[in-house]
Length: 284
Image (tube, rainbow, N blue to C red):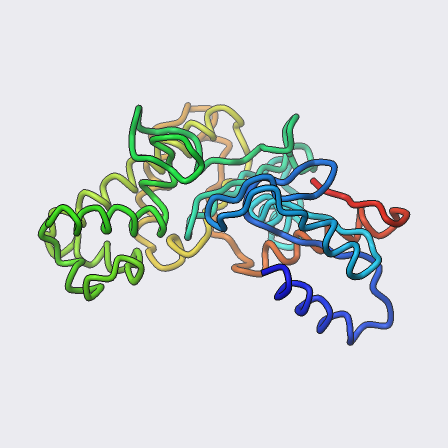
């Protein structure tokens, strides 16, 4: 994967007069000083020297940011939210992540670990997660979580229409199949859908109650593919949070799609990495 990234950067840089810095949005927890990927459960990465590898290959400063925090910054800078004082972005796709902008600053936390919404625990002693914990939100909401639950169900000989829709291949499952099967009365699919809506609403409503943001952005593949999920979660959040929090909250769709993280990482690199002396690695 590192070789693929190097090749992509080289191809892009070939058309530039000068390469000043590189910004990378990467899933996982990023070391604040080295830019290494400390852990990325969905990638199977641990202690991967991403920033150092790219800095050595291209001789420029490298800024590495968690992918969803980068997407939140991209939405804040280049979406329609530039005038907002605070913004919370939640993205649900293969995994679940979030990013927060408070008083115009990207919130990274004391250990550079802020925003790991997918690894907040919503079920006591629940399903095991690749991160090592149990009951994480990501196991009940995300595309990867749906696939793991279907794999377990098929192994236990649970009868579900999802077996037919995926041709008994759990890796082929997507959220639209879950929604279609649930709407047709499939008991297992309905359980998946109910859990996803309930736990996601609960987690994000708690987030809103604690931070009281001005803007809440809901984005990612699941929200884009399933408008009913957006409507259900948005409505549930407004009911579950406090009166003052809901009164000051605007819930919106993400505007930039897959470009949000790209633009966010580029903006962070240009504002922080471009003037750093070599061989400094800048991470957030």
